[in-house]
View (tube, rainbow, N blue to C red):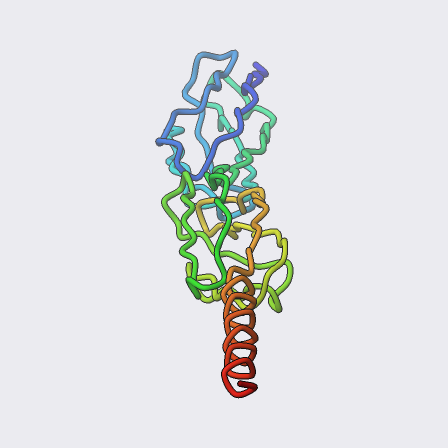
Length: 193
């Protein structure tokens, strides 16, 4: 007699998903065997236990070879899509930076635990090395926090924060100039008598 296989669609998984069993049956009641036809993102035991290896698409074939009473069943193939895991960045608002302080420390975290990198929209105002911003002149810039992902995680959406660098060196310079002018003026008065 003829027999058919019913093989349920395989839900998408992530690279962090646990091993799971496939759902398929033969109309004959005989056991169904499984094998990977293409792809390397998962392995499957003939009994139907799937083990995730990495991101990608794997095609799995279900078969039943028949016996004395049943003809081999037409094989059925299903695809399994394994996705990387999404991640997010937490990068809080930045307080104004005073130019006199010279440097400014940046801090952000990724939900993946991977390290976050930073870029400055205008390196002439402030340049980034690692998590340290070197302040060069007054101005307003945008700091971008990024995490590019890896074999497990997708790249995180960038997060930006505005930063104002206040030129607090200018105030001291003006005071100094005024003092210098006063000194010259006093000097002039003293000598004119």
